[in-house]
Image 1 (cartoon, rainbow, N blue to C red):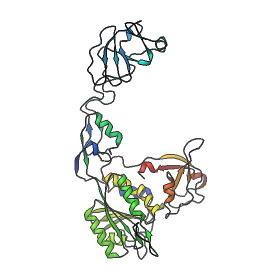
Image 2 (cartoon, rainbow, N blue to C red; image 1 turned 180 degrees about the vertical axis):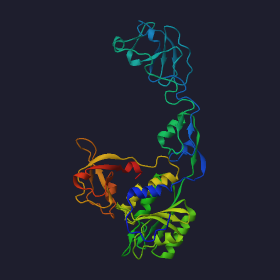
Image 3 (tube, one colour; image 1 turned 120 degrees about the vertical axis):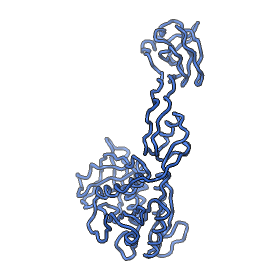
Image 4 (cartoon, one colour; image 1 turned 45 degrees about the vertical axis):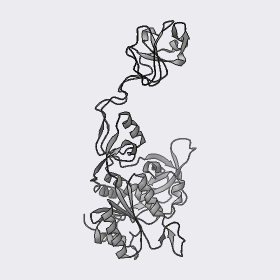
Length: 413
């Protein structure tokens, strides 16, 4: 792609996403890790079950296993007692087996009658008349062999990002270790001579560096490794040296600030000197001065400096790219259709992402409300809200009431 030196028009969000994702190819090496430490990792090979789950028919309830032909007997002798983990004997004719939840159902048994529907009588047990009237059906309260997973089944495809629910399933198959991609290394840097880290006293003209901690948290929740470059002051040589160092240490670089056209914004020029700039200036609000390209051969995202812009552009542009580089097959968060009670009154030439909160007592459907202050320098509205509402280009008023809602929880925010 050609280096961008003079780009004044704005690239649409959709076009930028398409162009950026074309460069998202996973080339990471692989590792074998214990299932105990596999949460958040991405499978580099599919997982195929070598067993049936469950391995045998088992009881779903505490009760009595028997044949359907015996449910009306006045007394059904109890011929054996089966606890979970015990090996049952084949069920003798016209008898039942006392059985507990999870225990293997004996051969010849056709149903389990729960203990609440049974009375003890001389010579065994009998089923209560009320339970018989409700019906006792073949197969009831029996979890069949392989009803969950069958031998040879592909349970998890390559590119699956393992969550807690996956680990439980894999453990039920006897899986001890899995093959995953190594963790992506992401270098972050904050640009601006005015920045200081929390814990230091502010001098006149200084502000605390919130983007460092915002980005670090977002990356940690993706299960990736952080390379902290720190604060880059507003000098061209310092910027170039820091970016070159980051390119040698990480798989991707993410900076915040310094990508506009001001005299103290050196990131864009440094990237063009060290590599190439492929995308610059998006039709997105907030976050217009986003940049994407390469420093040497390392992918680079230059996010805006305002914290709300960092949050939005990370969610919409950087996050899917990072997940794709990590080898993750599903790299998009989910969205919901919602009704926005206070849509913007004026249309915008840029696609807007409003910070919103869910109204909990709505009469019907998902109803959301835009936070009062949408300034790109205000991050507290994101903390107090629940997600982003997407307002399409040149829409407002009633046309902007039916919106796409992006829950923060779906994007690891």
